[in-house]
Amino acid sequence: MAEEFASRRRRARERTGSIQAQAEARGDPLGWFDEVYRRAEGDTAMVPWADEETHPGLAEWIARSGTIHEGRALDVGCGLGDNAEALAATGYDVTAFDVSPIAVQWAARRFPHSSVNYVVASVLDPPSDWIGKFDLVHETYTLQALTGPQRDVAFPAIASLVAPGGMLLVIGRIRDEADEVESPPWPLTRSEFMRFELLGLTARAYQSFTLQDGKDSAAHVRVMFERPG
Image 1: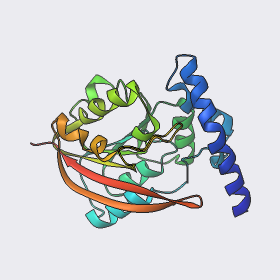
Image 2: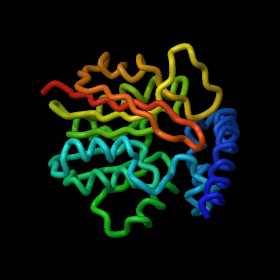
Image 3: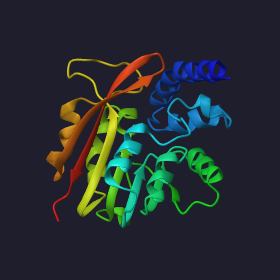
């Protein structure tokens, strides 16, 4: 069973690059997300980033920070909802959004009794009434799924969602400044992670860790930022 899952996951990763390229070519740079979920046909193995569990980097942060929180939290690019549900379990009032309607519907079906508010929205143009309203904004793997102008727009859009005195938790793969990547995911450089400091946030913690990515190890970073109150 594990070998079959791994085989399907490899096929999913192999075709993701072409799905993204086709969407980019037709002038719909975010359309590939919904296409990946559509082609998966309910099989999470065919969604390269869907592991049906809390991301280890977020799970460790929750374990370190405690399990009792208050306030509003926003999960950026929620996918199938595992990270959003983990945040809700700590006490946050969680809104979770994804640009893919299929992903949002899928997440809602997986967690039918959830307190999480699942919403279809774009990180490039979030609802105006979200600006400056969240005590915690959490982003894992969304920025690394964007490239070019879309990534440039996403940084200030995400930063704008953090309330005064609020926090931004960013988790993702990291690459050296000189490395080039041709297809998704596109890991961030250290300078890209720290771009949030140019957007009015202050880095409070920067932690490096390694996760297995198939047969390979992938360098990751978790950074906690805070907006001055």
